[in-house]
Amino acid sequence: MTCVRLSQERSHLWRLLPILILVLVCRARDAGAEPDKGPERATLKGHTGRVWSVAFSSDGKLLASAANGEKRIKLWDIATGKEKATIKGHEESVLSVTFSPDGKTLASGGFDKTIRLWDVATGKKRATLHGHTQLVRSITFSPDGKTLASCGGEGKPGETGEIKLWGVATAKEQATLKGHTSQVTCVSFSPDGKTLASTSSGSNTIKLWDVATGKERTTLKSDAGPWAVAFSPEGKTLASGNQGYTISLWDVRTGRERAILKGHTNDVWCVAFSPDGKTLASGSGDNTIKLWNVATGKERVTHKGHTGNVHSVAFSPDGKTLASGSEDGTIKLWNETVERYARRVTGDCWVVGLFGRSG
Image (cartoon, rainbow, N blue to C red; front, side, top):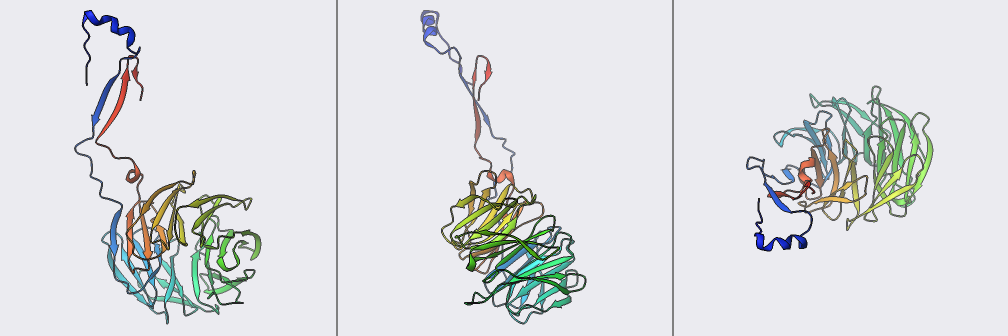
């Protein structure tokens, strides 16, 4: 604390001073505070090809991953960062992996045009789902775990995209959703499981489907080439990652594009909401991951470290870890706690006046 002493001879200077006597008080940061360890927590190495897909188990203890040129799926122990198991069975490269909500089943799809269901505990195959005539790009479980949605396409001229709904218990096809006029690149269930969103970059559309009837509810049109899609946890907002280097936030009820997030310098291949819905993660062809404030649309932080396109991002169930898969063949784990983005300083300062602290 600094004090100012005035002599009686200079008491007239009081008239020239502000009414408030300002005192600068600095509080040193607690010496015992935990040091900032940085955002990157670990790099998982083991794939020999471009990593296309990463997914957390429901308890957050396992991460599944798939890579180009590999007919296998890897399971990683999040606590140690070590590979726990390798699951083999596909005849060609695996493009997409996802866990069931109860964490007991892992689904995978890829270039061999099949979807396979695996027992997570044993690594044994439970079922093979046949029906797609094109490669399977994206798969996702409904929130209740009873239905699996899949989509595909190869981007060939004149092809129509495929979307299929499967009964998980029966391993049988329930419905084929028709309407896209080009390959379908991503599917996502709403939190209540009643709506399925799908993207088709070739036709610049996002479609919302009634899961119960298999009928199209609405089509959202975007000139940005939507590639990836995700529902917010409360189901009111839909995010699309676009080939036009942007991310769009859509109002699900009205179908209106309410915000366009700009900052990436290449195609946005993947998007994922944090469990609390306050943050959106995006991965891009510019080799970065960006985190966005959903309420304001402002960029919070950019993660750099990958040396290739980022094709998949996923938050852990507790929201504290973000996983990213890249064309550089690696998976990175990032620390994503609120404290990571709080401003760190060596002291906190306030201005104190006659009537108390003002800052």
